[in-house]
Image: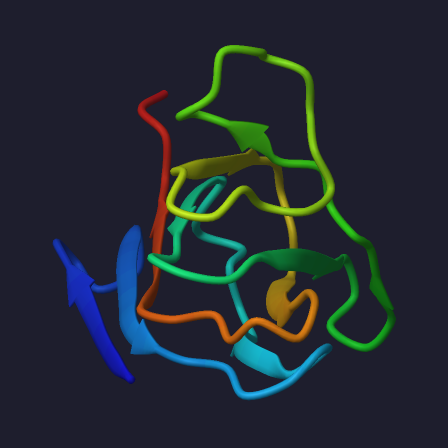
Length: 116
């Protein structure tokens, strides 16, 4: 996995090159996203879901995502393979899990602070 921070190192972070091996594998845990409120996710194969925490200890989910590559704006709980997914909200942390037996490949996550 490669992690990159941009700007001042707090407002934007990117994670890439993440691959899963089994159903419910934890692909990525981002422990502190209090500086970000917009999250964009993409995998080239397999599907995933996302859990969130408001206190850093208790995880809940899946968090609903917008399918930015689909024809419907209805929120989804599991990603669509090879579609860009979006999450907006305030969290203490986010955790991405593989959903199903097909391996998630090349997961990329961009965490950003929206313009205010």
